[in-house]
Image 1 (cartoon, helix red, strand yellow):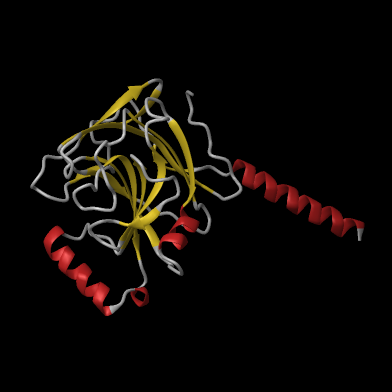
Image 2 (tube, helix red, strand yellow):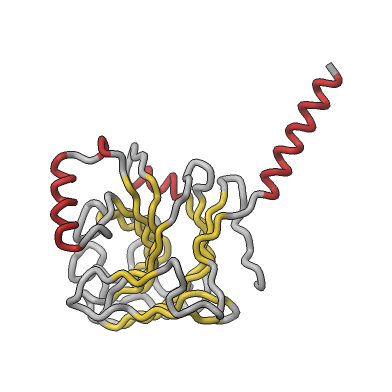
Length: 250
């Protein structure tokens, strides 16, 4: 009995040690030596009607990240990802804005602009998509290409809606907007974030078994015609019981 207890205790200890040593899954850690658009990231234009938002690698108040500058513009800065949300559902990152988009209104197409947003895309099992939804997606993809996802979740830095607000995008109910920060109180400096993407997916699309396949960032002002300036850095996924690791050099 004592021997069995010791073996059990050793097994638990090794398991805890393994969890403690588990490495975060980095999907966006940038270096000053990176190219302007470091692989596998790319700029994705959703329309030719407006110029693309400008993106560049920059060291900003001690943090190396992606600087976004929007002026009557829109484009995503994104990449494909493969993440098992059952194992590592927590997304950690940091971002900053100079100011929110003053005239934005996320409930209208004319106001669908954000100083900063983090855009997650998902592939859904066929049985989660109705015939009508599949038809709408097929039409959208015939116009905009295969970059149109089955479903998407956006964490946004809004101008006025309360933190925690969740609603459909003004253009499509296949994209849900979740307000993570709002207003200008925290503008002008880096803000650390931690979100359980698995839980947020269930809140946005109840019962969904979606697979996370893409991550993008954006500052966009194509609808309001305003200007926005933001930064994004240090994207990584960790297990539920793990803390967000502090990026090296900070």
